[in-house]
Length: 153
Length: 249
Image (tube, one colour):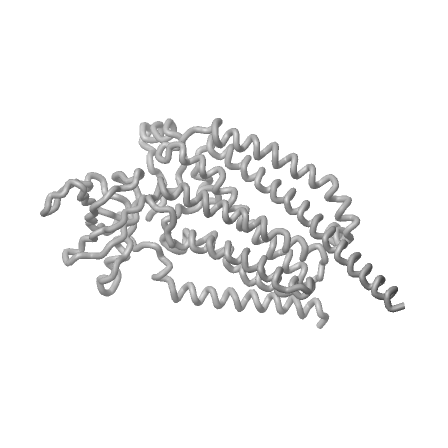
């Protein structure tokens, strides 16, 4: 073997080892790396998580309700996060991000209460991969082609 | 390959840069200038984000170049490590600070966009975290070069770091597909075509062309400086040896 071939083998070997090491690490850390669970994934978990979790999905249409709590605080908001399959009720007290609206993707952070609802302490709006001017969005809505082929959550 | 072998000769490299540098610089000014005009004035606001969408025209090309620079650095490192191409080491070394700059720009503009849109400057999702690791890889690579005075040894060790660190590049690219992340998935390289309106693609592609040519221009200028600095160091040490010889006599 020439010195060049030796160096080529060394680089190849190092790269294969690095890929294997990182691949194994990432697959072991799979559940930790994921930024949020979807409502379906939450149900699929063997036991309900006791620590704080993040939940992501779309705000279900017509589910946003304000101030519907025992103490009747006006800043309280409740809404349903859905991924099309399962859905989870979320209660939150605080200021919502500008992009928050029904049908919009959100990621909420908090812990589950006994009834299975999520008491959120943070609500983040998730922006999807679509960019278009307002006129185009309006035209699509008019033609009834809005959210065609929307990527699933 | 003949072209690259030809480039190994510094005199030939000088000859190419003499026209390639001004060409790349001119292209960067033209496309970048036009891109900025379209990004700030000649393109529509987004239906949801409003004018904040204009941050994308600075952010997306910076993020692309952050990964492209790292890939070039890794390829140059492989060529330098295996074939001992003298200019490949210099190209890899000089790419690192430029790539680190693009990465920092992507991180900063991303945070500026994230606060109004997501409601958070920073989140530890897979995309953001892997790009932060990319930034640290660049800094580590630069630090390694500076820590070792012997250039040949520094090139060898830094090349291994760059090659191993390349594992991170596909992780960045696919982080939004492999894991649930707050960062949106790919908008341009998609099976069913870009999900960005054509009026917004114009400034984006112009800016990408501008960033790319700016990278080429900066890289050539900085490689030229590095080669000149090394030549000067060689001359100085040769001069010192001669002086020492005279004093002994």
